[in-house]
Length: 303
Ligand SMILES: Cc1cc2nc3c(=O)[nH]c(=O)nc-3n(C[C@H](O)[C@H](O)[C@H](O)COP(=O)(O)OP(=O)(O)OC[C@H]3O[C@@H](n4cnc5c(N)ncnc54)[C@H](O)[C@@H]3O)c2cc1C
Image 1 (cartoon, rainbow, N blue to C red):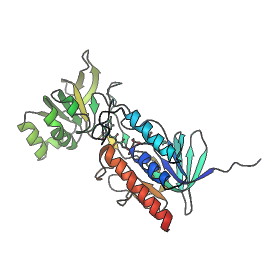
Image 2 (cartoon, rainbow, N blue to C red; image 1 turned 180 degrees about the vertical axis):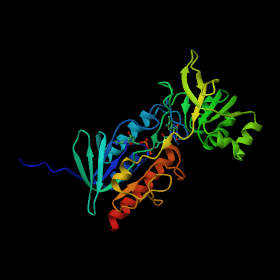
Image 3 (cartoon, rainbow, N blue to C red; image 1 turned 30 degrees about the vertical axis):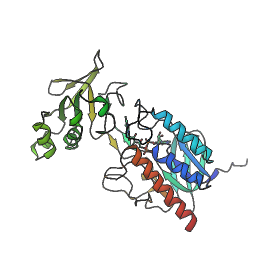
Image 4 (cartoon, rainbow, N blue to C red; image 1 turned 120 degrees about the vertical axis):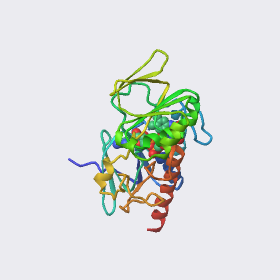
């Protein structure tokens, strides 16, 4: 029996979000044979509209992705909508295995799988991206004047709450680790000075009330009723593939990259949001995709 040879590309991009699609368009326009392999769900897929994205403010996320996919296809980019289950990188080529569409081989790999959201077990269905968020900039303006709770474990919680406080009609902050509230914390001082209630407690369950409000039950037996919840520490590095590839990681678990997305493996690039990176939110992820595409193209043409 003859074995089918895997399809071969110049670059396989894993992840069709802001970073991956931006890179795909640029590399397709450079006349490379590009394959994007991705699941269709992006981090912001549950939101009704995107905010802080130039020319697209207020558009549904799916509309933006559909346009970007069209642009990429117009530049010759091919798509495979499937889950990537493993990746390998050798000296000469990279191999990407999918759940249902076999294996692809390429000269280079761009990892653009986004961050992994660790949604707390107590969050009711249907609220993530609608009344529960993780970002102080994305959907807070639209909720100005409403009651907010910010929930987290560390001093990221008071930091996030302080950044969002300008929008909150009333602000309640629940910090899971009581030790954090023993430490000096400028954000907490400013929150309290501007009327926020900050206490050490954990949410144990939550329900959506009849008017869409969130009723949070806490370990200490309180009920906190708010319109909007912000969660600190939700977004985590996605380490499924960085481990398989043996990439150097930073202390925060994201791959160590240069400004242009080059990792410790010469055939592997990485783009998207990362803790401490200047590529923040959707537009930042897109810009990191552009940077990675630039370095891939320069490497293709010069190495
Ligand atoms: C609820 C919510 C609302 C948001 N709203 C906004 C907003 O209004 N404005 C803003 O600027 N930012 C917003 N953000 C942040 C924004 O979504 C991210 O900055 C952006 O999506 C990051 O782009 P990315 O390309 O790195 O990752 P993503 O957009 O998450 O794309 C990663 C892609 O990789 C795919 N993938 C992952 N693993 C695999 C695998 N194993 N196999 C195949 N495919 C895989 C995913 O399915 C996805 O398609 C929001 C985030 C959340 C959580």
